[in-house]
Length: 164
Image 1 (cartoon, rainbow, N blue to C red):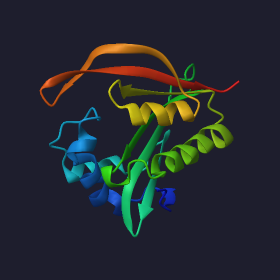
Image 2: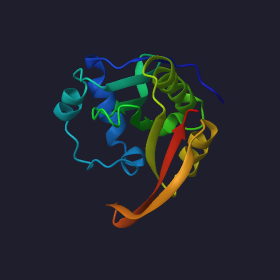
Image 3: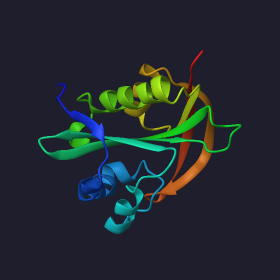
Image 4: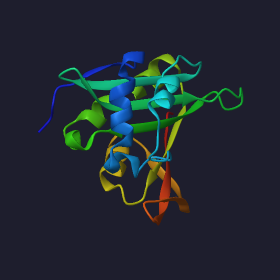
């Protein structure tokens, strides 16, 4: 069942909700961060940075998802950016990821003129892979033993969306 969410730019006041989201065990297992993420680190990350763009999904006054796009600063790579997405497990499969991806890809296409958006996703994260493929991303390769977490090795797919 799809849920209606307000998609808006991230704000400093979102730090506590984002801290809870990023530390949630079902979310943290898919991130490169360690589970001892501090609230101060999240708050620092929310400070405005050039070439970093972020939206959150808010439901009933609570932030339940975040998408971040980093545009490369190197002039030879400025046509591309990297993407990260996190959605609270209570809202998986309810349209939050699609709404966040739609917003950030519109920014990438219509305002930043990015030709390439890339990401990494764990090979066992079928729902995320499905979402990314639905949004036009294609697999470009697999990083074996890319990350260690939860007592096991994790492989990741490299995926990208190219604009023609």
